[in-house]
Image (cartoon, rainbow, N blue to C red; front, top):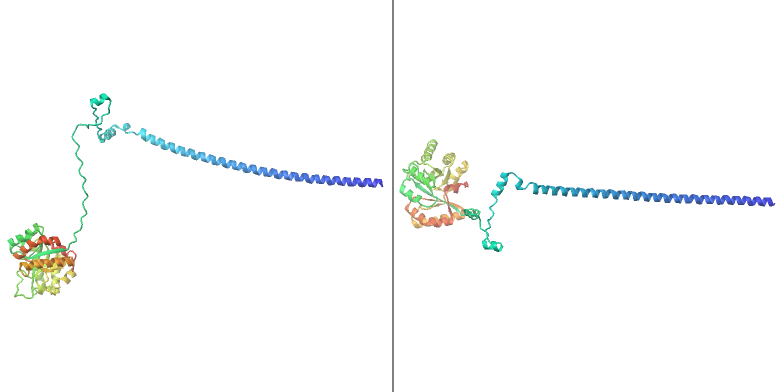
Length: 375
């Protein structure tokens, strides 16, 4: 009985020991795991610190290189500036360049010291320039040319018809200070002389072409007239002869011609020749049913019509009124053509009124009126 109890106690004691040993083993294992975790955490922190330290070192190195590059650039710039400042000075260049530079510089004023001021050590307050010819004064600045304002006044062309028979009358009209246009009759005794005189004075010359009127033969258009009864060859040949005999012709206008102007076929023949000779045509408008405009359009000949006859009533007061009417038409339409004749009354009125007319309109050659091809 006692032995069983003893055995039982031993058995319990052994079990207790085993239990205690197992507990110690578990605790020991837990402590080891905890220690391992702590060590792993410490290693991780150490690695993190190491990486951060490396990054900081890399950044520091980058900043140092940037600073070194900047310093190097500044040093190069300073070196270049010093080289240009000290190494390439004008006095170290070749002698010719030095002399050229010195020659281009204005002479320095020579300071003349008054003896008294030198003695007292006072700086002089004046300078005397070296002797020599006085420099030429600078020219006054030239004002820029003023922009030319176009003359927008209406244009007026005045044609004097029936020229070629009286040299003294032609001389009177040519003495007028005005760009009149002179229309000369063919086969007239002074056709060449008057045409040349007008051309020499810068005036325009036209052929005053005689053509058949409705009143023919009671009303005679004069020698060299183109007649409706002529053949086309006769008519064209006569026209070419007139154009060749009168020098310096720029254009043509009709003398009479009320019957022929109304015939389209015959006007086409005339305008075709005018076109070939590169002339313009002005219709004196002796017929209300004139076909010259349509013929000019067909052959593309520069064309205009007479607006006012100045002196079909050769009286001074009437001619004055007609000139005023001519100016009024020009103001309304922008341009106008007036036709006069070599009458003493016409010359007298033009002499009186031209200065007044010039203030209101531009007096121009006939070619300027037709340049716009007003068909």
